[in-house]
Image 1 (cartoon, rainbow, N blue to C red):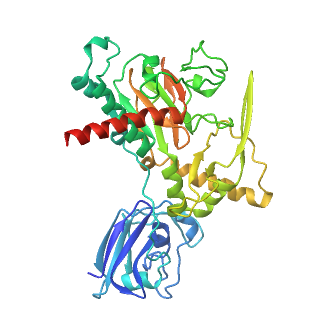
Image 2 (cartoon, rainbow, N blue to C red):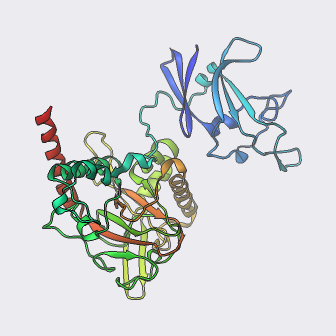
Image 3 (spheres, one colour):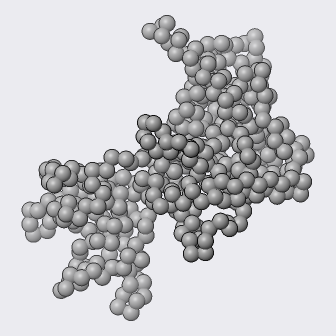
Length: 429
């Protein structure tokens, strides 16, 4: 076999059976392959073999239906065949029309791909962000079946034994360290008690201009400055909280008191992974613009106002010694508090908007999102500097309690539990 193929979400890797000119493997974007289709049935002129297909009609997010290693028709030369859904192309009078075909086939000779390789032996790649709720879920009820502490429990708030609490918090440490988000099923109904799942009893939550605990519901009377989207039943798109503040809370958790009758599900994106994917797999230029161009986040309410200026993706001041690259330290992304962009010259503003659109389109791909509908007693906690969160619009009396926490308090508390869990495992090993 002359080559192997590895299909990725946005490109294909061709691994050559023989190393020629130092080329072991090459990566090809799907849109590049579709644009360079060599067929004589719509993509190349049948007599001159000149290109007919216009790059402008090829969706940049195109993906093949399937791909196989094969041989070229009429020869035994090794080739790669990709099968596509039909796309509209321009006819002889410049009008877009769909071809009369169920699928379109592009057959590339392996030698041609090697000769035209533009991304050779690429090492720095990034996988998709985590997008399965199962990866981030902890079932408190399952732990309670084994580790319930009857003398400390009530009907609405089950306490765990010391061993159970250690295991539970060690699991939270692992989920939050790796994925930046954890969904806790069947935790209970006491928000105040849940706070201390994450921090020491000597610590406290972060109070904001909304109050100590936000009660996110349409009939809110507990919180100040509730003239904002969170207290309506509208959809709230992906964002991080308090982008307009100089110091942003490290973590937030949402405790479901009552789910909506219809809708209201939450979804999340690990923005750090998404930014890395943007940089190496989609558009380094977009990444550069989003990490360097400052934007204004401007919160204006009837009794509160705040303004902060920062790039959407803020990098560390110094490079990481391991990679010699500046690492992503914080994502500030909030469409509803984004101020007017005035820091970009006229001739460059379109490019900045295009970069933001590329980023936004990535975030709303299904394979980037973790979706989690919360029921009464469920909790979700997430890193407010690395994870974007959102909710769908809803009907009914949906009620979420929202709490902000200092990252240092959380990591200290859960880190100690992780250490105890490791020590206990070492004793029993």
